[in-house]
Image 1 (cartoon, rainbow, N blue to C red):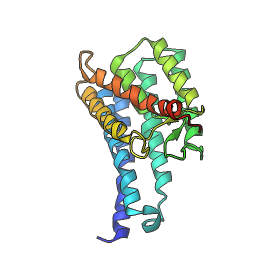
Image 2: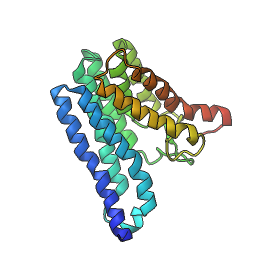
Image 3: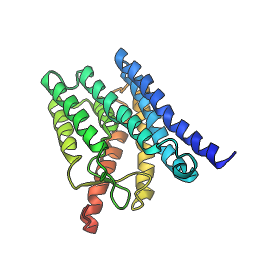
Image 4: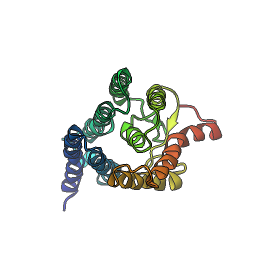
Length: 231
C-alpha cells in the first residue's frame, strides 16, 4: 500500500465521524440518550486515533487535497458541541430559560473557539476549555445534578474557553501523558459503560466518570500553577 493510499484512508476514517454524528442525532431525536451517547463515544474514540494516524502517514504531504484539520473541526463541532447541546436542551436537565441559555452559550462560544487560531499552546495543549461538551453533558446525564449546578458548570466552562487556562490534550501534551492518556482511555470506558446501562444511578461507572473528568479538566491548570507557566 502506497503512502498516498494510507494517507487518504486516514481521511476516510476521520470522515466516518460525520456518519457517527448522524447516528447519534437520530437517537437524540428519538430521546434514546444511551444510544446517542454510545455513538458519540465511538466518535470520540475515532477522534482519538485519527490524529496520531494522520501524523504517522503525513497526510499534509501525501493527501493534501483534503484539509484534515478542517474536516476534523467540522466533525468535532457536530459531535462535541451541536448534538450534546441539543440533548441537554431536549432532555429537560435544564428546564425553561436555563435550557435556552445553555444551548445559546454553548453553540455560540464554541463556534468562536473552534475558529480561534490560538487555541493550541506551545506544548500542544489547549488554550481555554476546548469545547468538549460531549464529555460534560454525558457526565451531567450520568449524575443528574440539580439544574442550578448544571447551569453553573455550563456557564463556568463557557467562560473558561476564553481564559488563559491550559487544558491538556490527552495524546499530544507530553507532560504527565503517562497519567493523562490512561485517564482519557478510562473515561472513554466509563462513558461507554454508563451509556450501556442507560445511566443507571447505582452504576460504579458514574464514580469513574467523575474522577477521570476532574483530572482531565484540572491537569492543565495544575501544570500552570506548579511550573509557573503562562499561555
